[in-house]
Length: 499
Image 1 (cartoon, rainbow, N blue to C red):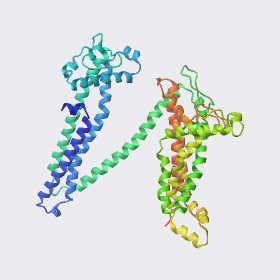
Image 2 (image 1 turned 90 degrees about the vertical axis):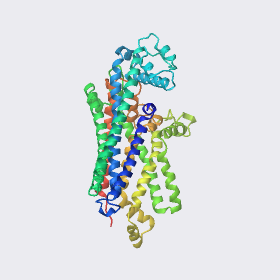
Image 3 (image 1 turned 120 degrees about the horizontal axis):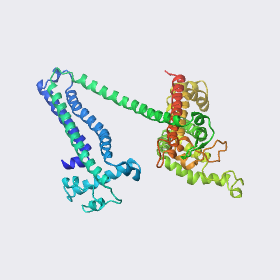
Image 4 (image 1 turned 90 degrees about the horizontal axis):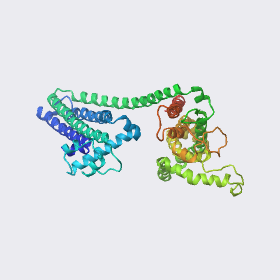
């Protein structure tokens, strides 16, 4: 029991409940068949439905309780534990998160000492938190710490251990009680007249509705969290400067210029270059794979092309910084050392660097979606065009592409949304300078890069220089949402239905 409570309790408990659900399925199904002396035609539903009903009543409520418990308990424990930490300790240390990290570290050390037999549970709970050298007291029982531990942290760790263990035990008892109650209820209702199929289908429908609701509610929660913080930002900073200003110069000491226009310009500029690279290459690749390539070529060329979509964006960023950027500098920069003998590019980071690499990343998005859309055009249209004497290329230009154009436009807009939200390629390839300029060889930055920058480090979430990240995030969300809605509108409005 102690091992269950101290190591992987939720996983072990979930496995036990799933085992009970499997047992309930088998026993309930068997009882149903026995109740009609093996003549399953007398049952309202198939025997398996009676087992499914028992398994659902055993597993679903218990697993939901475990999930909610795991989400709520850490918050409640932290709120109770942090009361033991004096305000001056938090002020001297830094944030509440760092203090709680020390508390958890000490609690884990005490658990380890108890597990190894260096001390008993009672001794761990009775350690003197008021001792002058808490670190030495812990070292005597084998709890080695790399930093000094103050008395309040030890007291908080002791309460943390107690409340966590109590919570785990209560979770286990509650979940098992629900599972057994569900088994007893399902077993008592099992008879030939019970409409098990209707009950199971209603339960599955409820689970599907819950899953859909969680997805919607998650989106709503994200939007509301950004909205409320954005409102706090506009209470501290003039909205005219944010939307109409031309300078981005955050200063945590005050008097900051926080205009989104330079960031928005950099975002759109890099995205346009990326789409200028990805759309032609991706579309031509899709046309070749769908109209010209043999089945053998297509079978290995398309998976190889789609591998680009699985490469981490940090790898693309490093490729931009170490390969593409220096290559462009050799062409456009360093005066006489450059191939063109000009000095237009002073460093490896630029809009063109990030745009080219991002365009390479977007190629599989455009090609894969366009390929599926082109293949969806009915073969009868091609045959009719060939019958009228059109060549293969004329059929593609005048029949296939016009029929697939709405879907292709939607694919391009979805790729644009992906480009606007990219971060790592821009961080490493485009630089961090917020400016409005038409020169693609200059370094610029984007909205996503500034969001990361403003929320990195020891930030004060009451200052406009930090809250501006939420306003930027909300603006970016609205921008990408608009592009997605536009893509869906175009696809639905101009899609032609072919018989």
